[in-house]
Image (tube, rainbow, N blue to C red; front, top):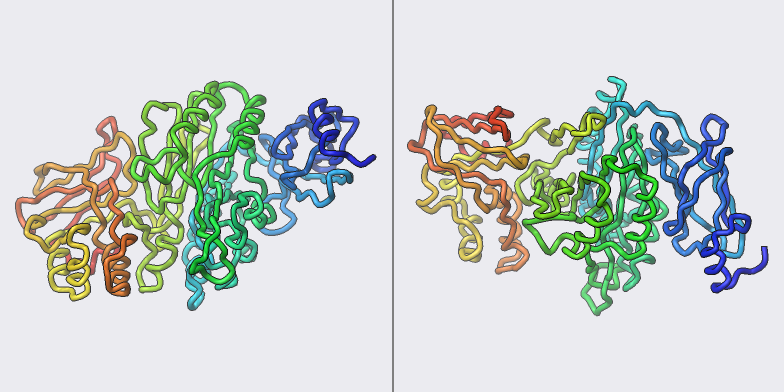
Length: 543
C-alpha cells in the first residue's frame, strides 16, 4: 500500500472503503469464523463478515484494536487471567498488520461478577505488606467466591475498577502498572478479569499528556473504552480519569515530574465511541457501566464527573430504562441518589486495600476511610435482571456493619494519650467521643445501607429514635488518623476530613441493656440483625 498522508487517511476513513485497509484479522471459535463481531480502534467500529473476517483503515493513533465479545463467548486467554480481547498496533499507519482473535463458547445463562478496586500495589512495600496481604487475605477470599460459583455451573467475571497501582511510587518502590499486573497474573486467579484506569494508574514521569501517561495501561488492561455482551446484557468499561500531571518543581518522589492532578471526565472521543457502540444494542437491554470515579457521588461532589456530562450520558442512554454504574475511587461504600437522572443506579465500592494497606501495617484489618472493612463486592443472578448483592470482607467474611457502645469508646478517648493529643489539634474538626453528650449512645456503622432500607436500634424491645448522621468512624480514627496526627505533630488539612453518611446513632436509656440493630427493606421485611451486648470495650470493636 502506498504511503498514506494524514489528509488522505482522513478521507479514506470518512469514505470507509473496506477494500483499502491497514489492519485486518479473523475472529474464530473452534476454528470457525464468528460473524457479526464488533471490532474497533477506539473510534470506528466494523463488523466481521460471514467467515469472521474484518478489515479497517485506521490512523492507529490509539495504538489498539479490540473486539466487543459477543454474548455466549469469552476471549481465549493465552496467559494470566485477562482475556485476549485486544491487540497492540505496532506498525505505522502506512503499514499493514494482522490481528486475529479466538473465542471460547461459554454458558452465561447464570453469571456472577466480583469487583475489586483501589488495590494500590506499590504504595506500601515494607515487608511486602501489599502483596502479602493481597495474596494471603484478598486472593483466597476472591478465589473461594469464584470457585463456589464456578462449581455450581455459573460463569464468573471479575472487574477491577482502577487504581491498581500507585503512580507516586512507581519508580521509588519499583512497582508500576506492569509489575502489579504481572504479580496478579502470577497468582493464577481463575475468573476472566477486566480493568479500567484510575488516576494512580498513570505514569507520573509524563506531564500534561493523558494518552501518553497511560501507556502501561494499554499493555496490561487494554483500551480506555470497550464493551462486552454477557448473556445479552451489555457491559461498558470507560476510563473517566483525565490525567493532567501539571509539571512543577516538587518536591516529588523519585521519577515523578508533576503534581499527579487529574480531572474526572470522559473525553469527547470516548462519548462519540459510546454512541456508536450503543447503536447495535437492542432497546431495553440491561446496561452496566464500570468506571473508576463515580458518575454520581452525593458525599464527595468533587470526585465525580461534572453534571454536564451526566446530562450527556442521560441522553446517550435514552433508549435504555436502566443503567447500573459501578465505581471505586472514593475508598468508601456508598449507594448515592442519582437525583433527576432516574435511569441510573450508582454503586460506589470500598477499596480492596482499605486505606492503601496503611492500617494493615499497624496490625489491623484493612479498613476504608468510612470504616468499611475491606473486602469483595459481589453481584449474583444477573440473568434475572435484578442482581443480588453481597459483601464479603477479607478478614471476617460476610459483614455489613460495626456497632459501638459509645460509653466504652468515650473511656478510650478520655484515657488514651495519643487521642488527647489529636483532640488538642483538631478540636474544631474532629468528634471528641469522650464528651458527655455521647453518653449511652449507640453508633451503628451500617456500610451496606441500600436505598429504601431502614435502620432500627432497639433496647429491651423498645425502638429508639435513630438519626442518620454525617459522622466519622471511631475505629478508623484510632487506627489511622490518630497515628498520622501524632506523626505529623501539627494540624494538617488532609487529616481533618472523612465523615460519612452511613453512620446511624441513637441514645439508649441505660448503659448496660443489650441493643439489637435491625435492618428492614422498603417493604418492612427484616433483611439482617446484629446484637450488641453491653458493656463492650472499644478494643473489642475491631471485629
